[in-house]
Length: 454
Image 1: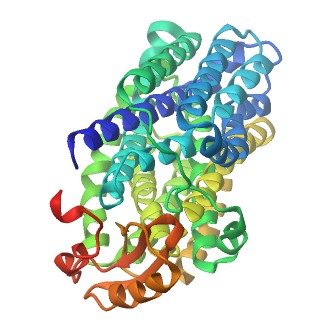
Image 2 (image 1 turned 45 degrees about the vertical axis):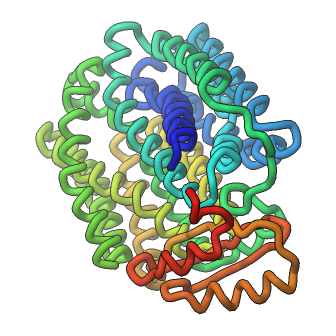
Image 3 (image 1 turned 180 degrees about the vertical axis):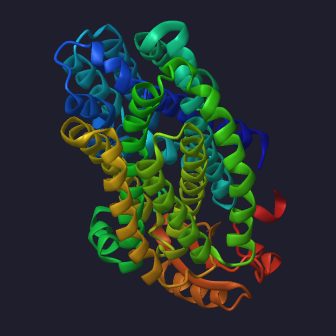
């Protein structure tokens, strides 16, 4: 990547991470804090935690498409402003209803699709996947930091202080967009990052992609349900003050990565990704069952939490990779859009369900529900076919007509390592699925418009 593309990658990753920090920091502390709010019930507290997922799922695709018409920066800045205002509403709220309204506003500032589209506008096709990978890693890092920092900030400022911090972070992200990120010279639709509505139905009917959509729904259901219920168990069963929970989350999260990183390498390099995903789902199911069974033992609870994060972090890294492998070459953006919507809906339903179950049956029973859902997911994973070990590649081919496009497809598919090629003349891009181990990159470069001189 050139210096401009590197700057875009860092800046947009920072914007994404800043926003996700704001959404996630409240997760490990809110269930305890909510008990002091007017109108509190565990069910309403669960809705307050998860409502951002519902509004995010509703608005992310439409706002992404709107950014094609009115520009990326107005949508992103407007979304961050709504997010900041929602944070202020939640910070000032003295009732659960007020926090629900604030969290719903936070989710309504759904800028994910617009940010991805802006990244596509500002990077060359041959380097776009690197930028997307950078943004993806920033999301995972933001989650890990948020789970640790939430209890720390709670001990300093309280939950209202977390929401004020979130508002400040949103303003900081707006400054990054206005000052650091250049305005795209041209704005156009990108099939690799945005949703095509006429393809959405076919993506949702794709048996392998549907398995992954249902899988990420369950994964984020279980994550938000766990982050609602676990603090209640720490505080009410073990009298472990919520402000100290970071002392568990920090080593547990760090030690989980010790196991996660080698398994990610094995899955991708050794082409054992399905087997790794099965092991991760088994780890998640086992952790949920053990937490329910042995939650009164402090040390067993800590070990179960480590196993939980091993499974969760492995799946959080592996599922997007599987989407990229199974998605049609020219329609990855649509597949990822459906996947992201399922993820956010899972967060909403998970937190809401955890609140209801906790209210009626006890916080520990939430983990029975989690284990049942993960067990059903395990059946879907086992029946999933082995993924093709192919990566997405984009090649800028320049202006071309339909007859030339058909001829180019034949030339591209004849290159060693190219398994699939789709050329859409109006896009001036070739969408490829390639085997990175076998790819003749020099031969591919011959068809890349202007890249030989880069």
